[in-house]
Amino acid sequence: MLSKAAKNELVQEFNNVFKANPSVMVVEYKGLSVKELETLRANLKKADTQLKVVKNTLLRIAAKDTAIERINDLFDGPTAVAICEKDATAAAKVFVESLKKLPLLKIKGGIVEGSVIGESQISDLSKLPSRQELISQLLGLLNSPVSNFLGTLNQLQSKLLYALGAVKDAKEKENS
Image: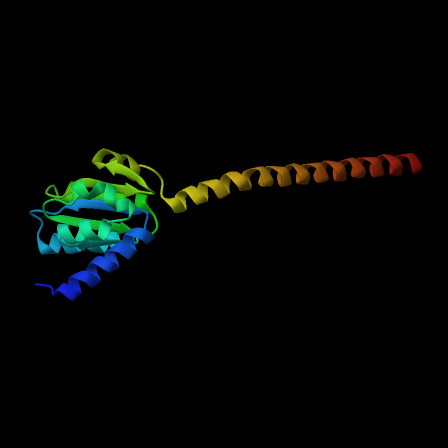
């Protein structure tokens, strides 16, 4: 049992985290073994996401005056909160993959970039490319026209050299 001071410190810590991180997902872990929960935590950590199990009343208090307050109704039953530090799609992918191995895991919903989302939207989010993949695709799109332009310039240079070579050959034939 936590002391009142420890609870206040925990509430303040979560309040600061909720204000700083725009993406939070809520899951129900009822029926999962400690080993399964630790595996889920490890997978989420690779996706820069923290999975925390905290009393619902403390979560509700910590959510006051933050965007997370809009999902207070999800803080019911055995609840774990996934705090996405960078890419919410990576966390969504981990949850959707984990559902295949852990049928007792239940995604309740959450907030991503200020928008309240449900279980189906988290599933849809998991199908999107990650932030890194999107950046790579964008750079590829930006690089393509430049590469094509450089290829065209090289072709023009080659054609010009062939034309100058042909003119040189023609001039040599005229002089001989």
